[in-house]
Image (cartoon, rainbow, N blue to C red; front, side):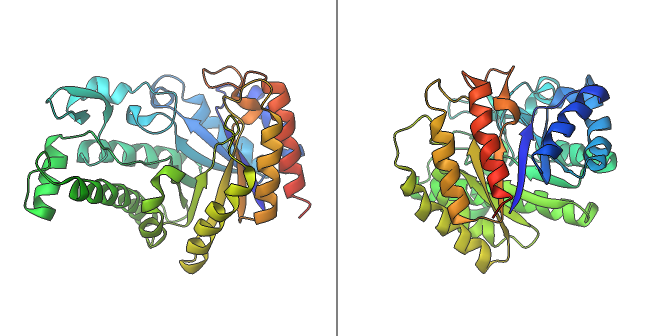
Length: 315
């Protein structure tokens, strides 16, 4: 089983190297470097130095654009949208919303530019982070696309058609980015994670030809859900991945874990070990210490997650 971890990163080679030393002791295969828009402008050390240092430690560097367009994942602070307000989502009341719209070509083109940068730096894969339906965007681009498909007004369309449309936009975005990666940087693995709440787009996403790797993240550590209930969810996605020849990965939560709930990391992790996805990944390194999404007791949380990662290598 492949293993890996999301890594908020560092900009100084000495500190990157120290973290990679620890990752190699855990026998990690992959590191997902959470690159923010500011890293392309103000803190390029994360992009410049991490791939080479990771490879020197036998770890594959993968890029994830964390918080890009105020849309994908946490850490949302989009310089691009400050400079390009035309990329924002627009509400039904015609007011700008904080997030960008991935139906808008100007936003997609910026993501492609960032992919070009990380590919040139030596990253070996690109991870499309939790694309989810844009339920509340009525920008010109969403309206035009809806009108082209259904010959109707997005604002007036039935709830069923709007849901179908929003789901299709997720699949179209993943396909657009995966196609771009494979046509421009064929050496890069293309990956995405679709949340359990977006299960309706799992099957069409699993059929995207240029998508290599598909997973989900059952983040139940702070909930009371029985961990055995994870099994049919994991198996359902695993079956889709096998049918469509995709690598199947699963994420284990080690972020924003409430104090006293750390044991749930081990419980969920044991389920992931039993169900044996192709890859098991942990979000995030060291319990995401030092961020607004840190575990309340990151040391204890990370100890549990580390044991799961080590156990995965014994299977």
